[in-house]
Length: 425
Ligand code: UD1
Image (tube, rainbow, N blue to C red; front, side, top):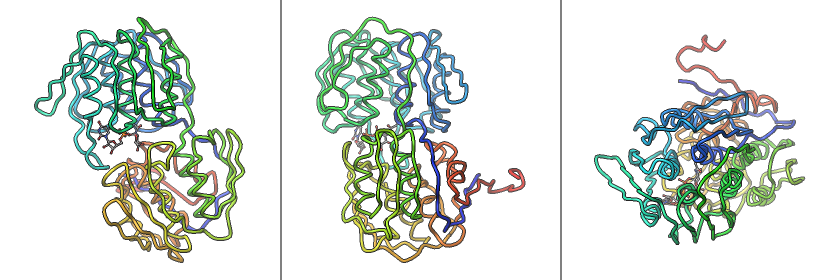
């Protein structure tokens, strides 16, 4: 069991390149089985969710290879249609393979995703849409067995603009017969990245980034090379780290249009921002202002994934801030840990009220989910004394070498083995 040890109170400085986006690479890796050929992906981050996706691809008979940030897939040998229960349990978002496996194999067998660290994660919208496209779904003994002799296009209205459901439908529809129209589709930038990747393989998709996406089925796709978009949540997390430590830092490989809601909150908090298309410089204000109310919303609203890092910042703001979590239940697991560090937060259902305190103090805390873990690291950077964060595997799901990146900016952070510290010396 590894832990992060952070000595707080040191300002950050310097420049950091933002990694490729976790939420873009995962559906794109699923999409890479669709061309029955070669795919080369650039800027593939070193995170454990990519490792799990790689294990899924191999389980499906696909060949994969990595050279630094370049990830290569050869799906000409695809022969499986099943994802083992272990892999489904390790990464709930493996559900995004469902549409792609069905499109290629006509059958898919996956265990039900069930609950996860963010609360129940239903897939009713995914299954309803796939049924409309001709899929027969049998749910038995905790497994979904899905068959489709022939997938056909359909007009699908999503009751909620679910990111995963939109992606699964796109993946199922590219090789289906006829046209699929998704109304009330998710508008997240990662959906645009998936569209652009699929189109680079010869798919005919338009409309991603808006609420109506049209997919005209094609018979065949070809080899492709594609660069993954920068991770907007990782960018948001490092900006939160700069804000809480009152530091000037530069982020490169950012798409600033993707983080407008984040930049707006930072500016409300008193930060000055120098913004270019692919670069952001954070200049701290004299003090951190409270943010009023932050409501998590589907894109282009404030992302649920950035709620916890920004809550960490608001613990040291002057005055009170209110967070309203509208996307997931159980997304306040970091609150108890922030309170251990001296934060003053009360939660009532989906509402968290954060009253700013003059200081946080280092403590032993546990990451309980990916972004909540990152929030603890953000808080620790500004806390007096040393913070030890366990549950680092959650953080590793989405942040590439977090300790190296923060160290390069001047943070005092090390990764240690919880049981045998000498192993890492
Ligand atoms: C994706 C992101 C995750 C992000 C989330 C919201 C990936 C790998 N993960 O997750 O980081 O926090 O979008 O931006 O891209 N829902 C249903 N039925 C369904 C599907 C979803 O009720 O069939 C509900 C969910 O319970 C949740 C909401 O819709 O309350 C949003 O979920 P969704 O957009 O699907 O999120 P994910 O794709 O799981």
